[in-house]
View 1 (cartoon, helix red, strand yellow):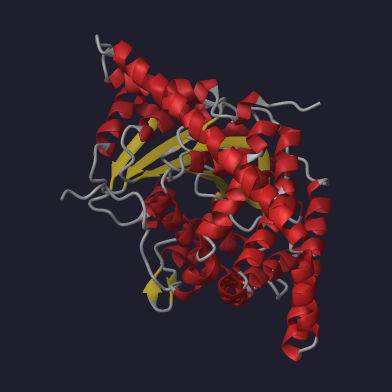
View 2 (cartoon, one colour; view 1 turned 90 degrees about the vertical axis):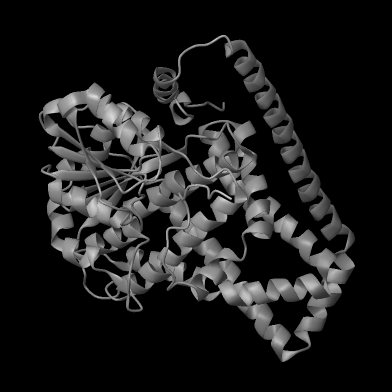
Length: 487
């Protein structure tokens, strides 16, 4: 029987915080009924788009599978002609090797996943002192809801230090921080950077102000559940080798647009399957900016290197989370994942913002894979290191095959467009069934189907991200969170 954990949608408590922050800013007026009608109309339109997108998805996938069946003689002829040439044989062998490697790696990850168990929360007496740092830039009223959700946590107030830093925002972020300060009093300390210096510098200031045994970073567009903080920091008590912990990220605005709805399913597979497996190895490769915890002495050990990090001679202003994770792994610490530490975060609703976010992430991956390669094949910690190295090799396989696959895709699209598109759709139908089954088993099948839509969207709309990010890895810039420019 399929069950649904209601906590893992934007929860009632999370929604209430956002609604309250809006209601406290806006009084109830005679226009309420009009607003309700407008909201209902918006939801009706969104539902229609939802159904249309899913219908189009299955039309394409079934059509692709049927086309492969119809074109089977042409596929056989093309494969036979390839086997008659040296280049064709090399291509078939390499393709077969990559397929076997991917399937073997997936089986290995699945085996690790079934061994994973989150750490249960420790008692109040055992909980370490904790400093939560919230950097904010052009976040507006959302930062207010974030701070309220943190103070609403089931965590001893005397052990919790909350720091919010406005990184020179150009909107009313600072005003919302002051409003939170007025309401929360000494429970929160707020600071303002003289000008925008970037998230890394805002966190750096927070780390230097922090007094806790554990530092927690939370993005200012995120909402934490009531038990998130205590679950997140408990591994530091039970495991002396734990240097960092990644939280479980879900999408907050998944009911507002189709892109967040698709990404919500993708995030579940990425975190609850992939990171669970990495956690068994003690080698989660990235602690997400939305929610992460670090042992304070591990941070302070690498803080000078982290803030002064450069790439190709230029200061690094992106990928601060992956960089910190790498530097903590390098010290010999384990990096774990806590499936029971949930955070709901906003993600881009438009394609223009989404591809910028993905480009930033991929540029960071390029840089940090290079950095990790400098220590991963050395005796960087006690115990087995083969699993960590295999994770890195898989990262490199993804990067090294990006350009060949990109070129092959363009060539096949020109020479055999129908065969290429139909076979690609069939592959999506087959390989995307794993995240669909995973999500459906844990939550519900209707939401799980969005994994198919996301795979089509990524394959045909975002396939260029990795090769482009590799070619422009030295470029700086956050790319998102800028205010609209006046014309």
